[in-house]
Each structure stands twice: as C-alpha cells, then as structure tokens.
Amino acid sequence: MLDSNTLYMILAMAGFVLIAIIVVHHHNCSDLIRHKRAEVKGITKRLSYKIDTLEQEAIDLKTQIEETDEQIDTLKV
Image 1 (cartoon, rainbow, N blue to C red):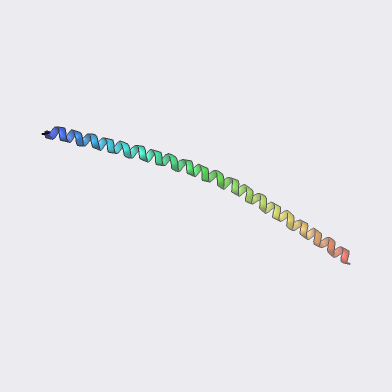
Image 2: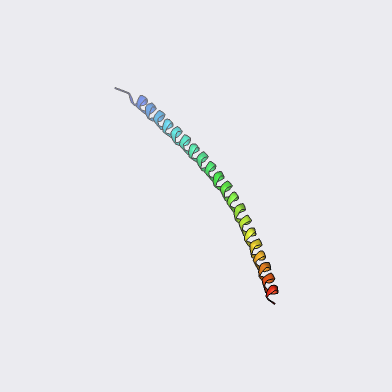
C-alpha cells in the first residue's frame, strides 16, 4: 500500500495538473473573447460608416425633393 507521502505527492501533482488545465482554458477563452471583441468593433465601425453614408444620401434626396417642389411651384405660377 502507498505510504502517506506518496499519496500527498500524487494529490499535489493532480492539483498542479488541474491548475494548469484551468490556466490554459482561461487563456484560450480570453483569446477568443479578445478576438470576438475586435470582430464586433470592426463590424460596428463599418456599419456606422454605412449609416452615416445613408443619412447623408437621405439629406441630399430631401434637398433634391425641396428643389423639385420649388421648381414645380414656380411653373404653376
């Protein structure tokens, strides 16, 4: 049968292996989270650029509509 020192040594090694597994898992999860955050930030930046472009186009179209309405009003008179 194993003496107590051997048993404690096996338990200590198992504890170190468990801690190593937890540290590696935490590192992998942190890497994945960092990658996903960067991906979301890039998508957000592209979408905000598209939104700004569409808002500018909407303003331009409203201006064109107002100018066309003014031209129609001048032709009616």
